[in-house]
Length: 262
Image 1 (tube, rainbow, N blue to C red):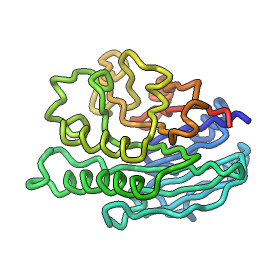
Image 2: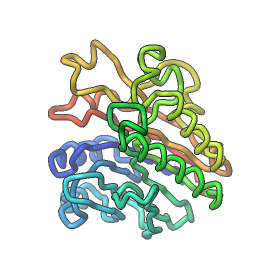
Image 3: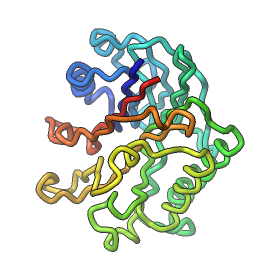
Image 4: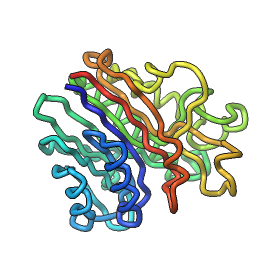
């Protein structure tokens, strides 16, 4: 079968319930992974999503902050979570489909504004989170696995609007990129988006601070879809839904999609 998966930092699932329902209706991915839901699980508006055909959910919630959810047309079972860096945050949840594919939904901490762990505890937490992610998948080699989410790091020079200008900006600093690439290599993960679209600038996030985000186009690719090496060749049809960033009262992230023939 062909499995289409989408990932989207929704920046409050309750506030943007209508946008999620619209995406489910218009794009109809088999699985949608949401980050930054900002709601306990019992406050996620499931009825609207069930009405769109997504009757299966695995989620971890937190009042007002963080939160990750996997919505699916297909039956799935809860495959647990890892408290990366011991933060006690709802930033990871995993689910297993009936065909054995495990989906990891991850929300890496943003890291604050100062790229120095001695001056900014949030930056240290971010680095520790990604280091734990690296170690976990080094010790638990992923097979038939897909990892998606807002990883809050734009690793390549063409994943940001201006490489030189952002070298000292959190999300593109050399130390973050090093942690990111180490984590990817440790799990032998394949970046499916860049496997499909190897060249050119790609962004999935544009700041709310820009009065005209579309014209300024000062974006970053913070949202990712990885696959374990054994199924990476099955990945295709990658795309970023840039127009969604222009919907009314949008998230500052756009959904990222890929399909897999599994």
